[in-house]
Length: 185
Image (cartoon, rainbow, N blue to C red; front, side, top):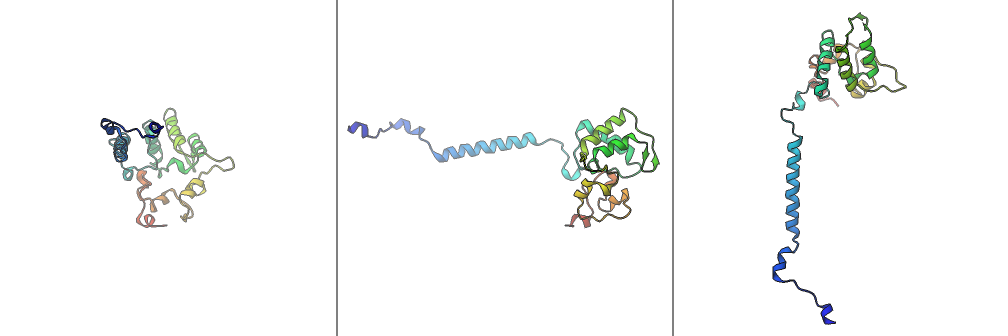
């Protein structure tokens, strides 16, 4: 009976396998640091443009850059080109299909440039709600109002009005704000 109650002792050579909480903690910490460093290296894109230098609202993947370039080439020669997300996709579709452009007669884009511009605009614009009217003016755009909740728009709204708050809007950079707007609530 006393043999059953006796505690078994390990031979001296078995002590090296005894669990040491500090050693286990150090292994887990080293593993976590190594994995974090590897993930940071994997996600770091060499040559990426810093956020402060990205002119558009969205970073444009390579397959849409030609469409963006054609959009800017055709639209920003007469007025400031708006980021596609300011207006719904249906507005952009209608604008691309109609040669009447806000009272001016334009030569419409033909395929394939029109298709490239449409793919860019469709990808970066927003869907239109079923109950929403198609907005053709910035001041009627639900998305514009959401981005600029406290902005009092001048009457009549001109497409060049954007420059008062976004001084680099002519360069398709809507991230840079005027000093007054940077510090506004």
